[in-house]
Amino acid sequence: MAESWSIKALDTGTSQVEASVLTYLRRCGEVVTIPRVMWVLEGPTTIVVDTSVNPNGNPHEFMGESFERTREQLPENALKAAGVSVKDVEMVILTHLHWDHAGNCDLFPDARVVVQEAELRYAIAPNRFFRRGYLSPESGWKLPPPFVVPNLSTVRGEVELAPGVSVVPTPGHTPGSQAVVVRTADGPFCITGDAMMTYDNLRWDTPPGYHVDVEASMDSLDLMQRRAPRLLPSHDYTVFKERPVTLIASR
Ligand SMILES: [Zn+2]
Image (cartoon, rainbow, N blue to C red; front, side, top):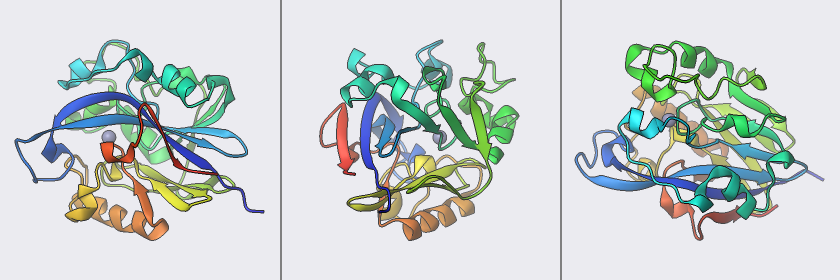
């Protein structure tokens, strides 16, 4: 029997951003409210995809963004609400290493934390425009980048990390972004990271507004749609039916 997984979305905080951050050169000047999402996959083991914003040092203020989080939206509490103890988590997959996706790796000291090698290489020494988003050295951030944990491990290219859970490189937003394709009882789903921030990216055939390579961003949108009929974007409240936890697909 092929292994399959459930997918839960966890709402771990809220920001207001200018809408063209999500959709390149569209809705400039409009403000939208977005979630900071963590995903939990439960199958033969427990996997977390992305780790949201770390509370230490207020990185949102460093980035000049609003950010609000209730007690129940703290990652450890949202995980509890999803019925998951951090001890159960054997693997953490990071779609990329931006501050709002890789902030709480230190919650999972016993898990294998997996990122694309190209992303780790870039995040340590990005172009100066992109340093702040990674909280990287030379960005002015006073703490170590939160993705630097001893249990971080890299993969290169497309890899099946567990039966029914694969990562696929989706460059564009960042050089080493990856999406996660998950087999569920309801068919395959693709967790996109910031390769797709909102369903408007598909609706308007428009890449996210933040990227190192626009053409690669468009290719990655195409690739993800070939891999799964249903995509789960990183910053779209319509993925939630209930908060802080929504069961998206069952095992
Ligand atoms: Zn990002």
